[in-house]
Length: 263
Length: 263
Image (tube, rainbow over all chains, first blue to last red; front, side, top):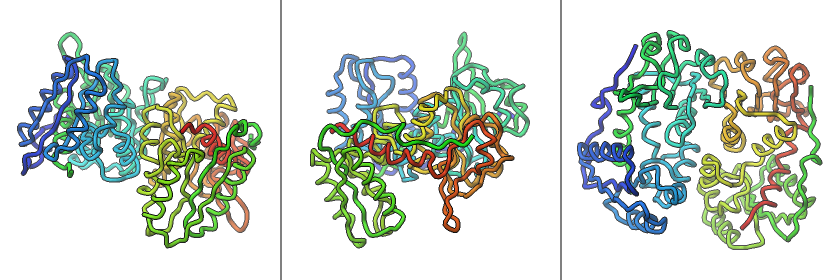
């Protein structure tokens, strides 16, 4: 069964104060501009002020870090994100780690990673959070379930592995070096795929009682495809649509992170 | 085949300077005293000065943090470890995070966890490091291999998952909520078990071409057992002994962390 996701089911209460999200963007990246506009839009809907800092592409690390440190001090700013990728002369890990972990609403600082791993309260990368909220909304029990995560990014695969362990699921992290990846899919109760290979997982690879979460998104000749074919999703118990699937939860969960930010 | 491990094959060159390891121990825990003595012994063998701080069991968090901050400043101290478990009134995660990440030779600070995850140079928890050194020493190729990790501790299971991903292995993290854990073991190329259930994995659960790494250690009526029976290890391609298995590498790798410490 193909499942489309309605953002409305996941929307939080709007902000009750004048909290703001600072978005730092360096240079002009077309794809990241689309994401940036989506983030600004959801902030607007939820009463969060989005403050966008567009820095020239030749900005130095020092300039960006100074900006971050200023934003760390400002009490109305409850979240700070740096649009990735950055121009090549900049070290994204070094820069991101200057963000106050309390304002690190992308969950990318060492402190956020360490806290998530140790089960402490922290900001969780929005897409991983969105997937967990989807499981909860659909009443999908995870305890003891074998979950295959395809992809090991810092924004999805890695935080998701930790969140699944919190729910006592049994997570496997796979990737392109796994030679019988497709053949092994039937061994799992839940599959979360986010590698961006259009129609990679097909009907023959899945079975009837599986839950398939498709986080892949690829554009081929103007058309958008997920990692998993519609036929595979129809065969499975439940497969999330692309587009209009869990992707719509990313900006919602980013906004939730900003709304819950305490400092 | 049961494989015993000879510490000598893994010993590094002794220290060429007067570097020291500071060990902070609070109260008196019998088991941790044994480990503490083992650590002091290997330091002695490798020319590392072991400085043991025995604090009374009613010490406050402030006292311990002050001590850590003083040790952070001292240049001859290249590593700082806090013996766990701590008395119940103390928060180990808060305390450990005051250690300078450059001296965090147990690899337990948020910074070490975040760096390990992002593939950066950092101190790695000694047992997890020891297991990886064992694979390397035995010429066990990990790329694309399915590895079952049983146990999700901060000292073994979790760092090992990240180290295996660095080698492009496909890791699964399992635990007591996995209902068909024993039946699933045959699906993996490599099994690393560290849950401390004596003789949990038996001959019938394993197959001939597997690598079994036994990190479990339990004492029953004065005798020491691993998680995996000797018969299972004999059936498999290779199974590490308990005692005299990978456990002997923990103190060696702790010492290596101190020897490599740069600050």
